[in-house]
Image (cartoon, rainbow, N blue to C red; front, side):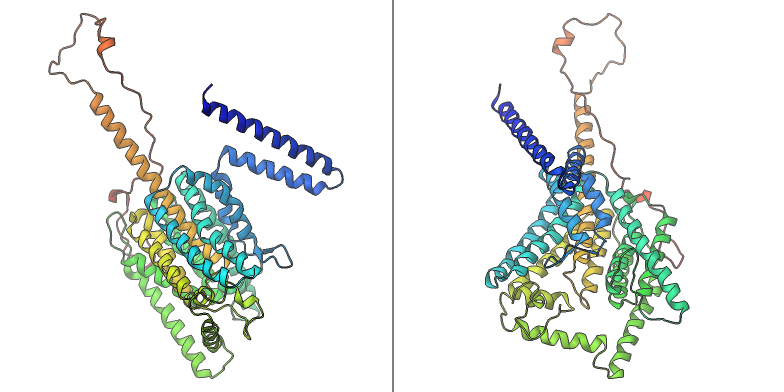
Length: 491
């Protein structure tokens, strides 16, 4: 018996002993505390699913990360999105252990650099919320990347993006229906979605803008027909308009501009006429801001944001290099308590100049990685990152789903690209081996003298190879239809 086999048997025996002790303990408590038995049964079921297919939980987590409803109580500030993302992280790590691409490794290093830079503020400002938020931020970025990578690398990226869009469409339809009832009663203000759970208008705006980008691009490996993708895009856009989330409008407009102006091999051309629909968005936001300035109301959203940013800079000046701590607005150390409505200022007040520099490296570096990726896979990731960064110039950044969603999509695209590259490399290797083992003969005649007894011993043995089919449609330009001359988005 080899040392490896001995180690495996020891591991199996230890696992069996632990499982037996666990089941015995649960059985002892089941009669008096049935909830423990239910939780244990769910945990065992989850472990069984993970053992059978590690990506099952990761795929299930994608639509659930859109759920911003709160769970827990007391000092636990946790959303369903956060809890599901944390649960799906373990099986996603198992997939990543099998190997990651160079691009994925680069993004993970960038995210780790930010975590290291923000650790200075955790040491300098020791309080519980600071430590908890440090781990929370790591899960939102690194955890979302790994979950997305597992989905893309294992070949279920079409299912993952489809579930994301279906969940987003459910929220969008609910928002549109609520808007119709609200408008029927003469109320034309922003719509705050209340079903299937309560959501702030800016949360719905961020969600619908990002998913509208996915529907607009709908890369070929997503396997959506043009008509369905077009319908989903406009449903998401209508829901976005009803929220009156101006930062969401700007984010979507910037992303569409990037998509339309992208001219790369393998990327289908899209009509620039869609920009005619983007121009009114920027003009509308400009008019709304002008009206707020002229109103002189110091309590409107514009002047409130300006005041908050000024106060946030005053807070930052107390600890300029390492910041005053993550989630400092939940403490009573300062006369003001609010989350700064700007990504850079929010990060700078929390983690200082050191953390802000690492944050900029993370966001710009992630965009560069997506930009250099094969456009068939990288365009949607690039556009999503652009949409999120534009949104966060006028709103909160470190907010649960709003952070994890774009990084999860980036991870999906990186995993799908790596799977395609691996399949192409395997096919090429198999073809070279087959060509190298093929017999070469200058005589076309067929011998009828029977087999040579020594031929079987002298002929080289060729190992049969199973060539995997491509996981997604080939990104060859011929697979893309001709550019549309219509004014809407093309597929």
